[in-house]
Length: 124
Image 1 (cartoon, helix red, strand yellow):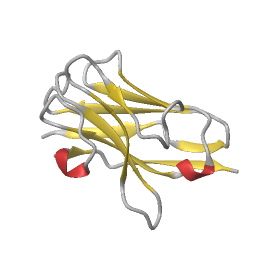
Image 2 (image 1 turned 30 degrees about the horizontal axis):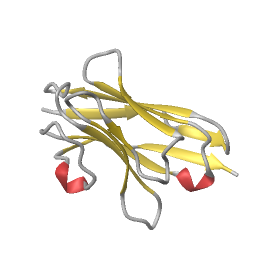
Image 3 (image 1 turned 30 degrees about the vertical axis):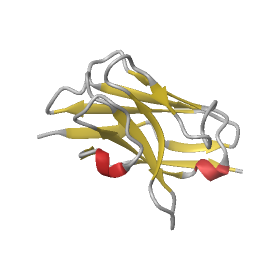
C-alpha cells in the first residue's frame, strides 16, 4: 500500500522559513515526478512546486518562485519543500503528491498518490 506522509508544518511569523518533508512508502518514486500542492480555506487546491523523475528539474508558479525550493531528500523516496520569506497568503494545508510518470504535471488529477497534508500558518 502506497503512503505519503508529510511533516514539518507549523506556525511561523511572516518572513520566516519552514521546511516540509514528504516520505513515501509502498513503492519507489525515485524516477517519478512529485509535486507539492496547497489548499487554503475556501479556495481550490493549487500547485506550488514539482520535481521531475529524470534530472530533478523543478518548476514553480510565480506565486512562490524565488521563495520555495523543492528537492529530493537524502533518504530514498523523500522530497523536501524549503519555504522562505513566508507570507500570510501562504497559509494553507500543504500536500505532497506523486505521479507514476517522470514529467512534472501541474494539475492534481495527474497525481494518483497523495499525503494527508500538513498545516502551515503564517502570522502577519
